Length: 202
Image (tube, rainbow, N blue to C red; front, side, top):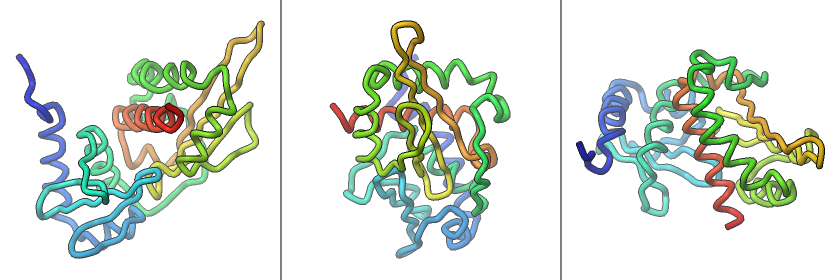
């Protein structure tokens, strides 16, 4: 069966909007770090701003273009799951509920492409990270913290390796991410972050 455009995520988006409409948009904004304007919610997503209109059931970038459905889903789930807190403790993907189940997806969609694009050139990762607003950290050969969403912090660290030890990479999440998003959503978020980094240096 051939899926129509958007069918894969359509039911998840519709369900999330139903839940959003049942809640106080100002409380959601406060918890998620967003801003309410004209009954719409503006939320930063890396270096862009998304505009969520619960009444119309739409998500758009502030330049009028439309995000991919996968981004819409994780954004809407973030809005529903955010409780206003950042724990300040790092966790690996394995440590989240169902993290082991989805780890191969996470590795294949995020860590492998990350190493393919930047493993031999940490400086290239630094350039891409700075374009996305990443904050440089003193780890590995290149390490940056990102606010993917206002209350969801992610760290990427790269080790270049040498002739004896291959390059390696790791991605950590603030512990609060596990309360906001399930493992499948976190794997998708990680993929989107790596793809955004790759676009910065294409």
